[in-house]
Length: 147
Image (cartoon, rainbow, N blue to C red; front, side, top):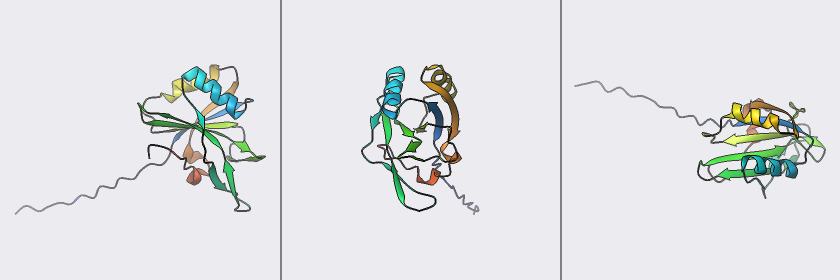
């Protein structure tokens, strides 16, 4: 009789999302419109804000964001303004005015997108990063359609 070997397969779901930090003087609505126009995306303001506790007071703060769902690619994009109501969300990256997150991205080449973003007039700088680079990464649970 053959000895049966058991294998344990451990499927850890990677919750990290690719991200691009953006520096610009535009407001969130104007940047969302610019990205919609240039890339043919359809960013919309999300009804439910992102809730993140303050590091010092532990009081929950809300951060509004824009989202776009590409139904053909089942990909989601989230655009969030770093500083809202006078307080930054990403305190470790104060140079970012916005962060653009990509969830389930299998179709957009981020290096090419970075080059295109840097050529847009309103964008001063754009840098690639990951949601894990931020100290608030455990709170980055955006409301989405494809979970």
